[in-house]
Picture 1: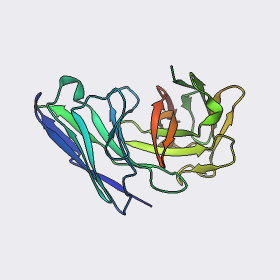
Picture 2: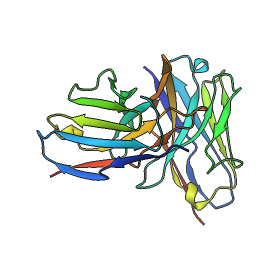
Picture 3: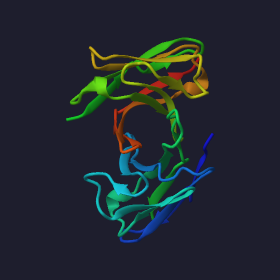
Length: 109
Length: 121
């Protein structure tokens, strides 16, 4: 089974900061990697798919990169609305039996 | 507008059963594979099960295999999750979600609001 590991597990930052969250896979998943944002009491929201493609309507301060086993989610110029938990998710396995990272909680400093 | 609404959650004793429903609107439900996922209180996301558009392919997470059954009624635009032999560690918010495929990649583009299942004696 492919395992996904995010780091850090939690992160404190200020409005205007640039932050980067990493996600590592236990085997090569090419660019079959998606990122989601989840706020308390809400369902996850897709941010980025195929490692680097921004979902329609998502602000351009969000960006994703990586391939193989190492991926990053970068948020430039943090806004108050960005404080949430972020998850990576692999969609490489066939049949599709998706796995998620454990999440990164982004908090206000 | 694409919309998914789960229902059927509640409090149930260990060993009992519960059936969740997910009603879809705003898209052609029969075209899409559908998934159930869950999130235990304060924990991360766990994929639970998938059913293909015509029900020909069904897969489960090892944690629920043999106890949960995913199904769908395309005439009613509704997805189901029959949960039997429930355990305390099945306590979670259960989400239904739609997967979109494009050029070989796929992702969850639409989620329901979730329904809480609590397994407790």
